[in-house]
Image (cartoon, rainbow, N blue to C red; front, side, top):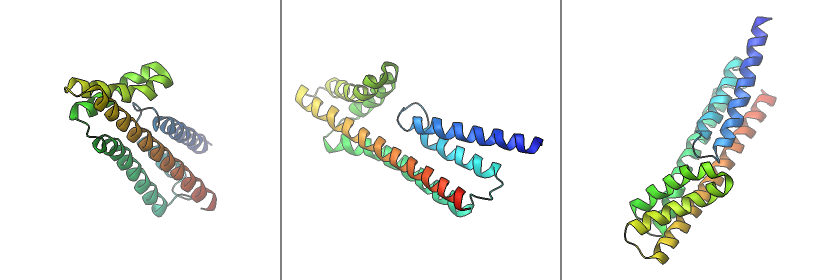
Length: 165
């Protein structure tokens, strides 16, 4: 009896980790992808790896690593493509963090305004700084969308393996 209650508690915790992780793919402060993977690993462990085996865990780990890599590179590539300075990259990061406190508008505008401010502080003209801000924002947006898609793929792989396993 105690074993099954503990197992249920582990499954509930795993579900919470996955849900918080999915939110974390959009909210920059939360480590979304690692939380999703951690929740899935916890669920597999709680089930004594009956439904989720080594192959599935390796596949989920690869998808998680790919999501982290895509997220990291997308923002950099978007910024580099428009000639962003290092200050613009720092500004975009700071703008993202500050933007969290202003809800959805802050999350959407924070990276743009941060990159814009970073470029302006580097002595760039307003039109160049605006292009950099927009390019950085587009890169971050595509990175977040790709990371979210990969996390949903992880959930799909996990669910399919759990049902079929």
